[in-house]
Length: 196
Picture (cartoon, rainbow, N blue to C red):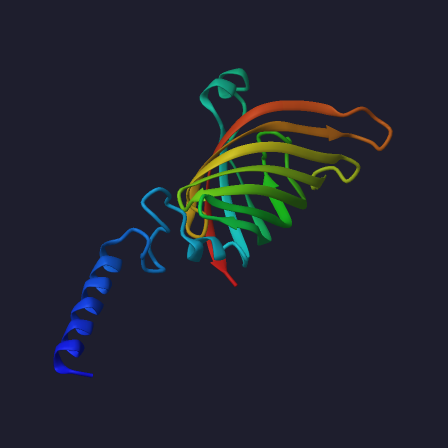
């Protein structure tokens, strides 16, 4: 190869590398996939882990006016998350595990049980989800409790986030009795104790 040809190849290579470096199609792994979405596949992969989350919740101002005797409640979730689908616009995730709550706004009193949750991660800051909890009252062994809810999270799931959740909590005092329903909005903050 002549010196002129070798010099030309080097110049063309530098130009191509420069174009890739400035292009939104070439972005480092720790950056968003493109300027059209904030989704980061490295972040989405964080959902496929065992986690322990602590939650602090309260009813919203409106429902608190209707139920002035409600207090701040708190609980924990020990679960595992799976990413079912990944796209450049986000990811579909499934969570399942055990949940414990003290003074839940929708299911009155203390309970412990199992939960499943299906959600869509828009980006590291915004997520929507639906949630089902089947639990046993820890104050009264014959009381069965369930909770159906849908919500919005904003913040980093792996660190901490605010959430707003609307749904129905219901309790049945004995196996043959009717369900007692309660519909409420819940505003809370969840923080991560650690990933394993």
